[in-house]
Each structure stands twice: as structure tokens, then as C-alpha cells.
Image (tube, rainbow, N blue to C red; front, top):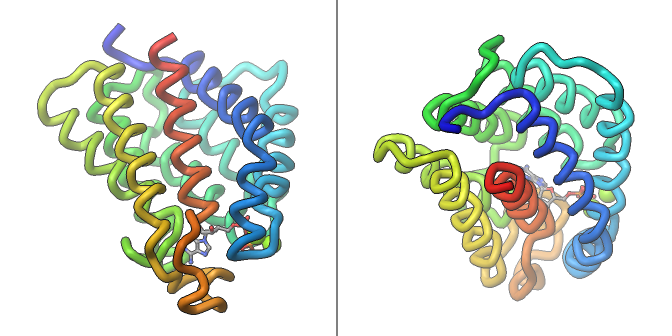
Length: 211
Ligand code: ADP
Ligand code: MG
Ligand code: MG
């Protein structure tokens, strides 16, 4: 269809949990290079809690589901990424309100809200070598796809590709936010773990939408 319903959003979250579990060690290795080697563990703990929180519950709308994901992540994940991801999902959920089906344009607005929430909380801009370097290009790709009247499959595919390219582009950057910034120039030459996980989150949405 051309609209995304609550079941699709639930499938997305399930797919994130699955892929975070699979990629946990890689994320932690990335964080070992320029942080404190806990990013995979942090996200796995968070999305395991999210899965438990969502299990066996009826959800009224995509918006309320995402808001619950956000508040669970804020409660369960310490470190920088818990509050930041929590904020992202909460703000996206709030932006969706109580509509039962989400268009590409509404999804685009929600992702914009997620990005501004992350930036309000963490004050990172593109080029600081954070999750913003994956999220911002995804937001732009989705906005463009919405404007061009693309299908959800095309739009989310473009967003996921943009996030992946954005994550890969963090390798030569020097970190200016978060723990990695303590390393100064030694942070150069490694992919940012939060940008890598953001690419996984968007790729999970692609998987859910194209299934
Ligand atoms: P911690 O650094 O507290 O151990 P994690 O390892 O779970 O937390 O997450 C690290 C990731 O969080 C970084 O790779 C980066 O993408 C993201 N991050 C850290 N600080 C910020 C910030 N101020 N704004 C946006 N993202 C940030
Ligand atoms: Mg860490
Ligand atoms: Mg930590």
C-alpha cells in the first residue's frame, strides 16, 4: 500500500531488535576503537527491553508505539545513545500524533522531528562524527522522496542508502561531540558507532517496508 500502519511500525521495531542483536559485536568493536566499547551492548539492552515492553500489547497508532519505544529507551539505556535514541523515537511518535496510517510525507515530518530532538539534546551538527551524520542525510532523502511522490518502498530505500553513506562518511572525520571527541585527531580513521547503528535502524525500516 501507499500508507504505513501500526503493524508495519511494530515490524520495524522488531527488525531493529533483531539486527541490533546480530550486529551487536560489530557496534561494540566500533565503539572500542573510539569510545568505551559498549554501544552494541547498550542498544541490545535497550531494544530487548523495548521488545518486552511491546509484547502482547495492542497499540492504537504508529505514533503511540514510537513514543513508547522512546520512553523505554530513555529508561533502559545509559550512556549518550539511550537518551538520544529515546528522544528521536519520542519526537517522531509525537509528530505522528494519533493517525492510524502514515504517508511518506508524514514519515518525513516525523523523521525531521527526530533529528531536531537529537540536535536539541546533543547539539551535534553534521561533520561532528555522530549519529547526526547518518540521520541528517536520511531525513533529506526522505523529504526529497516525499516531494517527488515516491512510494514508501522507494522513499525508505533512499533514506536507508543515504544513512549508510552518511555513516561511512564519518570514517575520515574528527569527533567533536561525545566520548570520541576526547581522542581528538586519534578519532580519525574509524566509523562512528552511533552513525553505524543509525544506518542499521533505517535499513531495518527498509526491510520492514519492502517485506
Ligand atoms: P557512550 O558514548 O555514553 O558510551 P554509546 O557508546 O552507546 O554511549 O553511544 C555513542 C554514540 O553516541 C556515538 O558514536 C555518537 O554517534 C553518539 N553521540 C554521542 N554524543 C552525541 C551528541 N552530542 N549528539 C549526537 N550523537 C552523539
Ligand atoms: Mg560507548
Ligand atoms: Mg558508555
